[in-house]
Amino acid sequence: MEILLNDRPFTLPECDRITAQQLVEIQFPENQRGIALALGSEILPREEWGYQVIRPNDKVFIFKATQGG
Image 1 (spheres, rainbow, N blue to C red):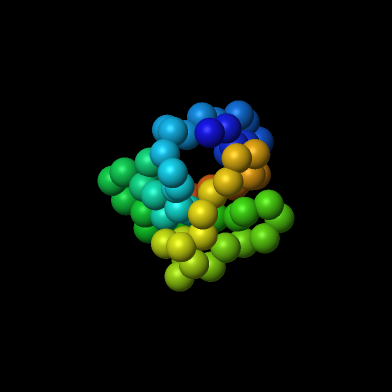
Image 2 (cartoon, one colour; image 1 turned 90 degrees about the vertical axis):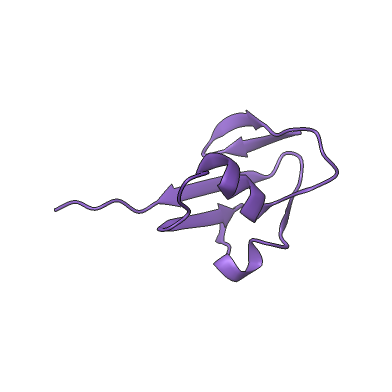
């Protein structure tokens, strides 16, 4: 399945469905702290990640907070 991830084409493994949570775990397998996810132009609350299904051609943005100063 093809989606746009952070404005770049991204191919997901063929499966019946993948949730936003699973996509985050694919991108950040070690640590999911400090991450925000937007589906289309809407920030998706973390409590919805586990049941929000990603569909072909969805536009997904994943942001990771960084420290700086």
